[in-house]
Length: 324
Length: 274
Image (cartoon, rainbow over all chains, first blue to last red; front, side, top):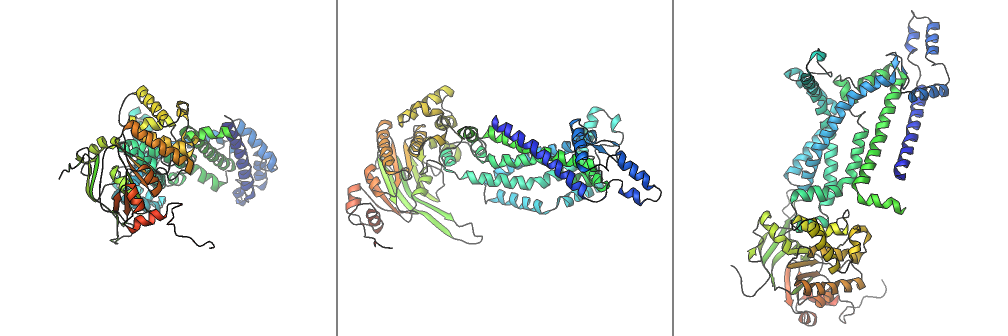
């Protein structure tokens, strides 16, 4: 329990630090949301100054930070200039769309990578391993951008899939079942891109971790007892190889909000990606900070989750901290 | 040809194991680990297999335990040639031939408790329910000189000697006929070696075991073995009772092993200063 508490305090300090740094860096960059208005001869300089005062951009940095922290406590996460609304609800809707995409993709990736990696490690150096390794190396060298564009081209030519967005026109008037089908159809392409780009890394890690333990004498002994292949691989070898994989899974969780940004922009998926790109270009300060902070939160939560999983999965970790 | 000259538990005929050097593409490099090995072993006896590193002892152990497929040759066990069996049939033979490995650290699953380690083979072979397997695991724990209270300990909490007792108990939990001890004493220090050697002798008489005792230590081989076979470069070059091997070695490889026994008077003197 003390271990959990310590991790929690770490996490809070980390979030504070990240928020201060993002605040500092964004204010170091010259210009702000109202910068372009100054170049516009139709807008009086006094108006711009008044607007900046209204949004408190003329106040010193610590004051702005303090006001922002207060708004975070209220759940607003600051105010978006371009959307003229609090950042919190704005980001929440977008984050939900992103998570729909990335959670599906992450589950699929791991669901495919585990059996592929285990199979590859079991047949190390033989045909299945060679084929899988080459395929994964191939996927690794093709940029995800190219995969996405290729799939979009395919969708546009064949007309089988929508080329972007989250829902068809008239989505609201569909029956619940049709709504689900429509959503699934829109999700397929971005999810495929995400799975294909994440798969090689995970497969290679699973393969390496499994190959490391499959030679161990205790597995030989188990084979000598006449253990069945499936049980040997998934009850003996996989748990023994699991620790680095659990840490990797933590990173997968941590990247849930950030891994799909590019794909979302290309496939015009209304998630965090397009929102953040627009916000950065428009210097919509608090949206950027909110996005960074939420991503950090996921990263911290992912690592924390991985630690919990490790604690649960490895009896050796469970007993050791007591001795300290 | 089924040989029934004498009642042997296991009979090995012309066993060959080659590893092809597939690491380098295109190369036809072939490594012969076993080069026409034949011997037989009568029930209740101990054959000590000695030889230097790389002479093929461990490969032989793996082939006998069904963990490696020999390139050619036959292994008669229980009236069947186990080389010719498929994986499913082999599974029925596996419990009768068990291995104890050299390193008691890596040969035990680090995530298991002592009880789990001893129960696992029974679960794998589907012999008995939860209570039965636990009970026989605990009994086995006692018969190798460990106490029942240790059953819930993790592997990491045992000493080297205790771990090797555990590994022996695990091998015995399936009531095997043949136990292959592949350098099972080599990782232990001297006093522990003696204890485990005595334990092995006790267990042999109480469970009617047949041992294939693999070692590079000729003195220990002479202590435990009814007979000694000397291996060199994938062949059995000399076989006989310990007295004969020790006192009138015929082969160069045997003489080298005799010379390596500490305190033997034929030890060549090493220069004092290096």
